[in-house]
Image (cartoon, rainbow, N blue to C red):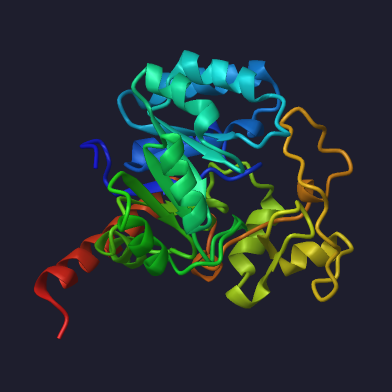
Length: 305
């Protein structure tokens, strides 16, 4: 773990939620800030965001998340911004990490492949990824189905690179458990949806604060990929959680308009949603996580009878 980090945690890149303010606040609090490049709707905006981030965080590691699915026509332009601003970590999602590897390795960065199965993990390693972001059961947004402990164990049987694990981890105790199980870092997304620096609308933040685990539904009916949605948000958009539509064709072109897209107005969260009880600054969230993590490390150190 770099000396600049207080905790081995990424504030996970969340579509339409993570922006430069959240990334900068996370880095200053001592975790890795991350955002998906499609959140910046133009190349000019993406350039501005990355300029702001690099100026504000200094040597602290930060992360950009690229959509490498074949439908993303904007990927070449996003890679140009990656080459210009040189984020230390680049996470690839919804496709192979291969398109990003040459660009990122040219400046010494690390490519982390977002994977939901052991098969995809093996393919990413074969493609040359430096690390794996293992998205497990309980994750918000696009989610996996595997237990984090089983997933990490399976991956460690053939890979000794960087492993990030995400899915339902909502406190410092869970972070310590994931590290003890073999992960290097933990993805935490839902914990930061309601953060003061998040781009989420206030109504979304309020819904997350009020929600419990039973308010979630996993469905591919919104984006074509299974994702964890807030039932109150589905109902607010005329969707019946008990009768979700069939999965649409997957299309992840960052140039596409939001108009008429179901995913633009339906809100996601992970199984750690019940642990979010207020909208507060990132620094306060990290402070609480660090205290829990430190107590967990002490408990592990003295053994559990």
